[in-house]
Length: 101
Image (tube, rainbow, N blue to C red; front, side, top):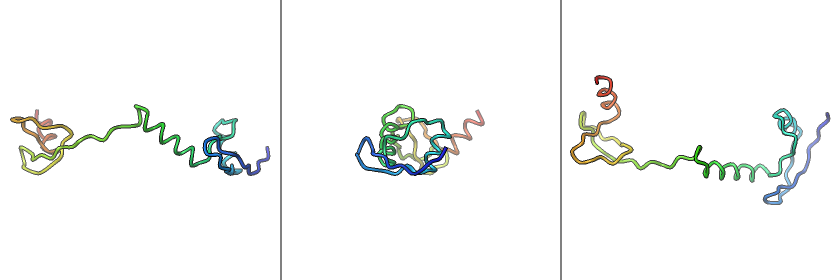
């Protein structure tokens, strides 16, 4: 099968983009029988939009709280709001307490 560069029109933005011979071979090796409909910029933007809106690959940023370790006194951050009267430990001291328990 002989390949040659193809000029395609993006279905999203209408811009013309080139599908190179190497890209055509790559698509064929992956089992894709249809030519891409979107230019590389629109393809990337769509994938980013889909990943941000799916529950699997989008994780909201956790709020972190600054505390002082109850054991060694170093400043650290924890992903939960500390409660009054409950000790909060840094990562190292927490691991030590779990290993000795």
